[in-house]
Image (cartoon, rainbow, N blue to C red; front, side, top):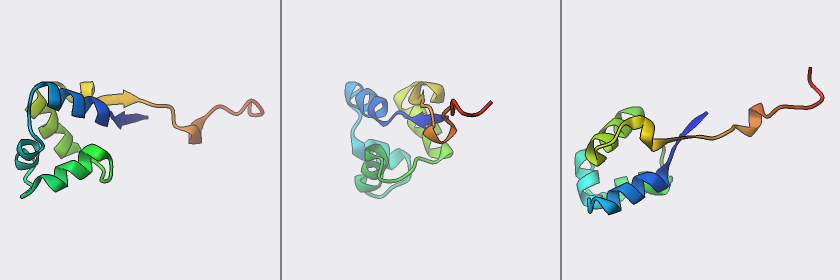
Length: 80
């Protein structure tokens, strides 16, 4: 399962000197608090928002994703 790599988004944004206010504006938020919640993981990032974030950061959406194994699907040694 893929997850949004929030740390990478934050690092890229900072390295490009893009403010949270700019990110919020690009996503249609009136204040930066809405974006801050996304970047901190307090709210889920929708697919359309992820596209805008990737465009703003100048990367492909895939670069903002990370593959993490979902423990719900972990292999059970007792199953065959």
